[in-house]
Image 1 (cartoon, one colour):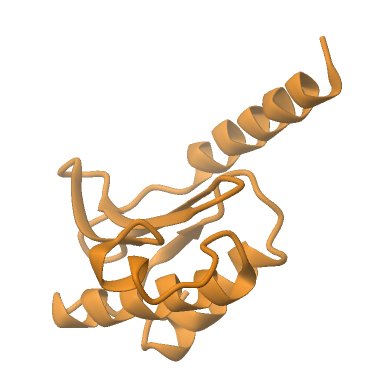
Image 2 (tube, helix red, strand yellow):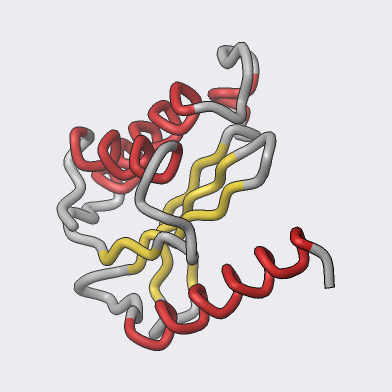
Amino acid sequence: MGKTDKKVVARSRRRRKIRGRIRGTTERPRLSVFRSARHIYAQIINDDLGTVLASASTMDGELKGTLKYSGNVEAAKQVGSLLAKRAVTNQIKTVSFDRGGYRYHGRVKALGDAAREGGLNF
């Protein structure tokens, strides 16, 4: 098992542990974050109904042309503010933050902070 494999397994273990504790409900849906080397994705999910209420990513049509590079903190901030705007439009104010096994640092933190500034509470 290589170094990369160990990192993936460790993140997967952390993610499962977090998902065991966090559940999106109708009153408080889950804000889920996934990041890759080039992009960052965020969804607001109601686990009771199994539906996605709002989503945003660096692959989104609104952001794709405006970003110089999609794998940095600046792009994550824009994704967070776009997601918050869409959530507030759908009358979603409070969410549970699911960081997906990533540390709350860098791009994940930038997305979370931008979502808070946009009107989401978590």
